[in-house]
Image 1 (spheres, rainbow, N blue to C red):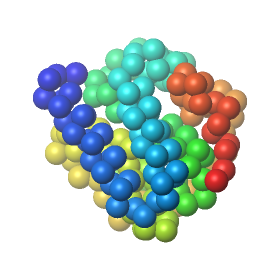
Image 2: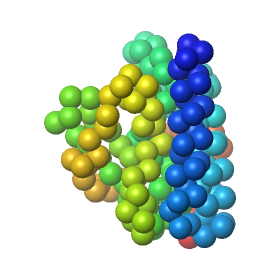
Image 3: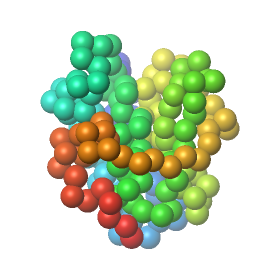
Length: 163
């Protein structure tokens, strides 16, 4: 990434961590969430994680992901939700949005949008229309990119953990 994009990515990570402080999470949940944010965001930067997660599906198209959080919305949101439990709802904006599809989370007790990859759009000045998102659920196959991401970063044994 360019130095400007690198600074933006770091700023976005700090914003996500700060957002967690305003959600009324208990201390253990807040620490777990912050650790996951840091693990996921650091992992987005690793070519090995991008390759493990997406190469089987995208092949050479993987090279079009030039910003570090590009493409990780689904895999990060689902893994985060599964590790954090029932207070996190998976949300989806479909292809009716010209930049869609896009996945993100809603922290249901605080009704707060929590988007681990919002910066993949906002670094280009694109605002995400969360108001058109809808709640969805997700069933995973063994070779789903969500599972491949979890394996690549070492959390595959924990993704079905509940509070």
